[in-house]
Amino acid sequence: MSDVAKIVSDIKNGNVKPIYFLMGEEPYYIDKISEFIEKNVLSEEEKGFNQMVLYGRDVAVEEISDNAKRFPMMAEKQVVIVKEAQDLSRTIEKLVSYVENPQPSTVLVICYKYKTIDKRKKLYKSLQKTGLIYDSKKLYENQIAEWIRRVLLGKKYKIENKAASMLVEFLGNDLSKISNELDKLMVVLPIGSTISAKDIEENIGISKDYNNFELRKAVGERNVFKVNQIINYFAQNQKANPLVVTISLLNSLFTQLLIYHTLQDKSKSSVARALKVNPFFVSDYITAAKNYPMRKVSQVIAFLREADVRSKGVGANALPSGDILKELMFKIIH
Image (cartoon, rainbow, N blue to C red; front, side):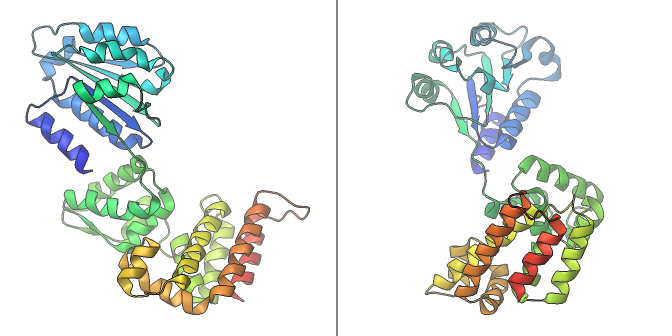
């Protein structure tokens, strides 16, 4: 985020590069930087003649170069944005001749999503000299809750730990989807609010009581009653609670418990670092570790693998996903 903030700050201060090559696995920031340039480099009056958006599937690299070499009309600069430029991956190296000698009055933005260019080749090295390369890396799921907090803090909102975990559990690490849901919440909640689990339930439609976050907690506590409540709810709402996601999240919990049992230093800060979790949740892992010694954890991981295979229809005795989950929970808790 700090790299993005610097790019935006430099543009605001008039320090605009002739080429922005935006690449990488995470499309969210590529879109954000591109949108900022599209909206802010030229005035509304200048955009008509001096701003164009091209798409990789519709153009050749030579056409991009030709458009970038044009002079602006009644403006200091022109902006050329190439979206979905990854569709040009086989020929993108041909851009090197333009990159070596870019038109100073052009701002060329290349949006090269889900891929990166070869750092050993001439194009990358030339871009380092004359333009700006931004590599948008995918965040891991254990980094998303903190990302949500920082985004909200920048807009004068806060969020409860449980609410952030619900969003991550429901939306994964898709930053665009998470951002859209946060925007919805900020429309209905006043500035300065702390977003709660109840807000998530009422405005996004994720149950605050019956979700994978609560199931993990109940399993860790060996709370049989609560576990049964949640899995019965899941069985009745299978589309919103796919078994594959539940198994994956439980596997993550027991893999973390395996790591916990091997730790020599079991202080709160050490556990949080080792398990890559917010210190707020460490007490949940301590409770779960007391309920599941190392041998039982190993057994549970084997049960989860077996359930994962069965959920994909492998084996002679195919069962509905609700029954597979109930059988799995029985094996885990007893």
